[in-house]
Every structure is written in C-alpha cells, then in structure tokens.
Image (cartoon, rainbow, N blue to C red; front, top):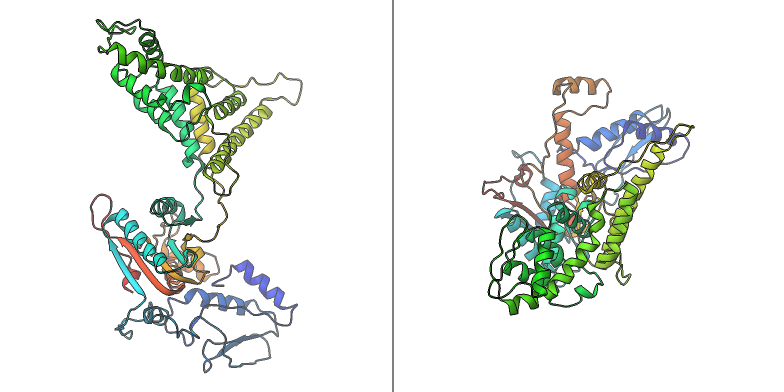
Length: 507
C-alpha cells in the first residue's frame, strides 16, 4: 500500500482491536532522506498510528538491519530490528543504472553525485509522435529477436484511454503481438463505423466517394448473387467514373440501367438528368458491359437501404438495423475463435443492437400511461434524427476488454504497471505535460486556503501534495524495471513545434 483514506485508516484501527497481529507494508526508506518523495506513505503511517486502539503496539520494521523506529499508543512499547525482503534488499543482478534510480532518484542534487555507469537505461528524444512509435517498436522487435518473451515487455502510458488505442494499433501493424487494456469507445468499432458510413451515404444522396468507401470496406460482405462477382465493385467504380456520375442515387440507377440495356447509342452516348446536365460520351461496347455488372449491385443496395428513407419509431429502427446487419454480413460471427476478427465484429454489432433496443423499451415504458389516460404516441424519427439519436446513445459506451491472452507485449496504464515486476519497461510520452500532470485550480479555494483546511483535518489536496504524489507515482513506475528501462518522448509535436521532456527525466 502507498496510502489509505481516512475511512480505511479508521477501519484498520478498529480491526486491530480484535486481532493479535496485523502486518502492513509501506514503501519507505530508513533513514528518510527524500522527504518529498516518500511524503505520501509517511502520512499514511502517521494516520495508522493515530487510529490504533489504546494499548496497541506499533512495531516498524525497517528496510535495513541496523535501522528502526517505533510509534506507540498506550503504555506498552516494543522495538525490534529485523531485515525484511524488499526491492533494495537484493539488487545484485540489476543493471547499475536501475540500482542508481532506486537509490538516488529525486535525491537532493547538492549531495547526489552523478553516476558514471547508466547501463540499463535509455532515453529517446524522437522526431514527433510517429517517430516515437517507430523507435519503440524497433527496440521491442530487437528484444523479441534476441529471445525475450513478449510477456516480459510492457509499454506504460500516462493516459491509456487517450493514447492506448493508437499505440496498440501501431505495434500490431508493426507485427508485434500486443494486448492493450484500454477500453475502446463502441463508436470506434469498425462495424459501427461501417454503419455510420452507410447512414451518411443515404443522408448525402450517394456521393461517389462515400459510396465507394462502403463498397470497398472489408465489412461489406453480402451474400447477394449480384455481389459475388469479383468484378462487381470495380465495375461500379469504373462505370460511375466513365459516366461522370458524382452523386445522386436515382440518377446513378437510371443512367446505368439505360446504358446496360443499350438505350444510349455510341453515336450520341449522353444521358440527361432531370436538371438537364449531360453525362460525357461513353463507348457503347465497354460501357454497356460494365454497367450490366454494376447496375444490379447498386439496385440491390438501393432496395436494401429503402427502409432508411422512411420514418420509424426507435423500436422499428432497431428492426431496420437487424435487417441491415443480416443483409450486409455484420451479424454473422466468425469461427468462434477468441480474438477472431469476425467474432469481435459480431460481438460489437450485437452490443449496438442491445443498446438501441434497450433505449426503445425505455421509450415505450415512458410513453405508456399507468392510469386510464391515453398513452403518449411514440415519435417517428427520420434518418437524420435517428443518426443523431444513435450517436448520443453510443457516446458513452465502450467495448468490453478481452482478457490478456498471454504471449503479448502489454500496453498498460502507469497505475497498473506500478504493481508489477517488469523485466523490460518502456515508459512513453514523457513530455512536460505528462509528469507531473497539471492539476486544475480550485474555483472556490486558493492553495493557501486548501493548506489551512487540510491542516484542520479536511480531506483537501493542495499543490505541494499533488507534486509529491506525482513524484511518488513516477518513482514507483520506473523502479519496476528489472533488466532495462527505456524512457521516450516526442521532441517535436505534429505541428513541428519543440516539445520539452518531463522534468522527472533529468531528475
């Protein structure tokens, strides 16, 4: 433990009145020379002593055999010297640089002498965020090629929710087996993105770029006979380009149908839309063949999305989504293998449908009247209104994290890493805004007032305490490395502006 809340300290105090012996471990040093670094566990120790029952004895076992101290409440006092197992008890196999961090990080610079041997520590000042990812991926691959197991490598992030998905995607694309504990938003799921792309296709009246993004997607897997030909999607793109059809579902279908049936002659191969705009001439022989393949596919897609062009209640929209998922292949699972891409997409699609149906059931219950009064009529939503409603429903939803399969490089939050023992640790994104992390100013009390109220017993944090907690977190993080520690930060941001490293990097 590093600290306890006031309630936890009181519970421990009451518990110790009923048991003969309790052992609590705190990360301290004896004698204490880095007061700011270990202020957090020192406060926790003082709180524990304060809540001990009368007559209880507090024995403090020091990390070193020749150091001890005790705190006692009541009449009895007992002090004993002992050597207990600790991180600094046996570091004979550690790299010299890692030992130096444990012993001297955040020590007084006036008395702390620089070391000549920093083996085991590497600092990377990368050229931009992408350069940082490349540098870390290169070193991880080198470790894997040298025989290091993937599970012995951990990448630590300050904000796993913000940076975790990007790091996970980059390392995976680099061919590194990776597992990330970040909870991805459901809206970021590929199948949900494919759905919104289809909805936008209808809202924008089939623009060429949007249409091709839907058809070219790996998630577009209908079992239609019109889509089984390997030339179908390419024929759509070729036909629309030849006929200069940039948008308009009705216009596309009408023109392709006329070209496919030979209604447009080679001598005057032009097609007018309702606004009088003519398409450019097209060779009858090539255009007819391509249009004959493209037109059935677009006609089937138009028929499938026909219900999107009507108004429905939220419950009916849930049925529309279920039909779309079945038609386009989104609801079909894979082989049932854990981590299989198709299985994950089917899982996300099922989750989306459950969310919409739950919201629809809530609307129906709210609309029903408990007395004899007539029930409120459920609103009918058009496609634009439903799309906005769906975005609101999914805004706070996340995809369940899959269990760590083992045999992967782990991408974890720094709060999780400080509880592990890691042979090879990469702490990335160490810019000046990551450690120490800025704390928002309180709108009611200034720092002086917060100090005064905290001294009077209120659980209020002040700026100095925040800085101490940040130092302690960073210390607990970097001291978990056993074989190598790599610290990295982007020296240049995406705008080409210089980025300074965390002051802890030079501590």
